[in-house]
Image (cartoon, rainbow, N blue to C red; front, side):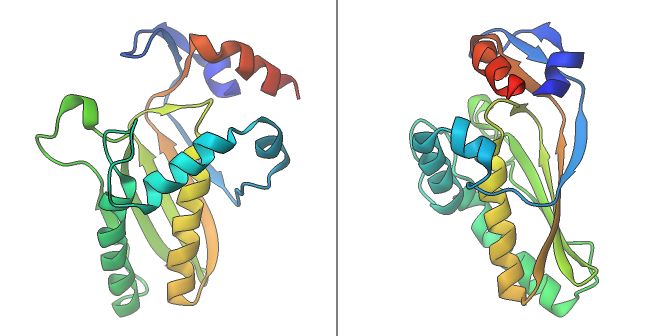
Length: 182
């Protein structure tokens, strides 16, 4: 949030005016629902909704796509690949589909997993992401990573995140400022 607030520029979005920040790459060593900031400021209703978005094959309203539907079969493929070739850099999957409706292109565009230093590392690539609600994606993604690591008998390594267009909706700025002050 601070990155977007500090270096962002005004822009338009289908859901209202935003501040768009420059692309960002960072690494998360761990993220959980019991994080003190998420416990205090996180939305428990959205938490459950996003958990379902990442685990169920059906599209859950108000979403227009399901990460579970797109991720599950491909992550099963990635697990088979890493069992066969633990050194591989090829366990990289796309969540986009050619020709899909413009309003249903997922924000999470690709996920890669690899075994390094005896742990499962993950890279998540987002084409766009709301910096105010990004935790709703990061925690379920970490849970996907942890599940794959368990299947492979490994610990979780870092989760690297690339966001091409991080943004904040102007409508959320009051809540963003409240969190930033804590």
